[in-house]
Image (cartoon, rainbow, N blue to C red; front, side):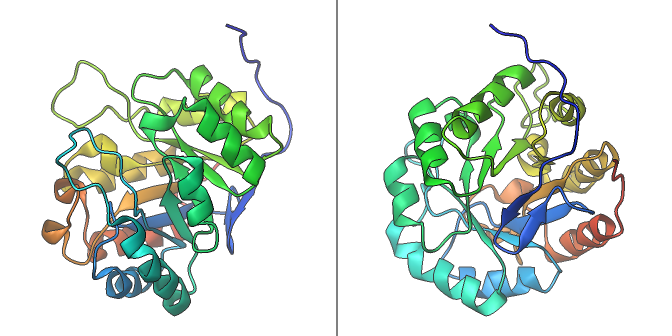
Amino acid sequence: MVELQPVAGDRRQVAIGNLIIGGTRPAVIAGPCAVEPGYVEQAEALAGTGVDALRACVFKPRTRPDSFQGMGREALPLLEEARRRTGLPILTEVLCPQEAELLADLADGYQVGARNMQNFRLLEALGEMGRPVVLKRGFGATVEEWVAASEYLRGRGNDQVVLCERGIRTFEPRTRSTLDVSAVLVARDLTDLPVIVDPSHAAGQRRWVPALARAALAVGADGLLIEAHPTPTLSWSDADQTIGLDALARLVLEAQRGLGTTA
């Protein structure tokens, strides 16, 4: 394996719709784990907290095949209406190039989940499409492997890439994953790409999400990707780790104040 070398020079900024990640302050992207029938009204409530963009996943890879896999095509009109009413960019997960094509006119950026970090054919296809991509770190991936995966996108001419730390699998069972805040610093040393953090999937429990989010901001993360819902306990997916609007609004305010931003 070729060892990556530290990167010198200016940090890259990535535009997802009208949102700039890697700019003067951390960005906050939030929404339920998966789009539900009431998503449009949920999106309006989330917009009221001041978030910068909406999480809006309609295709969901799940560990068990009997778990809710997302609404799929049925949810597409909800994405269109949510974006129209809120004016906020939409970030959605895709599992294959065909889904990316289907969502091209409805989403401002794509998310590649942890399970697909090394799905190289998907990364190459998204690289050729040239749309912004948020690339999550795999459960057991090193930072170098994560950054190397981003090169599959960039090698096809797409530099609109954001790295997302979401926790890795360790021996600790009390949290869903172990949030590796040091990965923010290491990744920023190895690449010019912006680095954001998903504290929700690391925590697994909503009461821990705000503290982990603040830790991410404190080490200089360029933003947060958070699972949030007006009524967290009723969320169709990942309810235990989904925070409510009050907690989200506090995090948005702290991000807007530039908590923990670094040069």
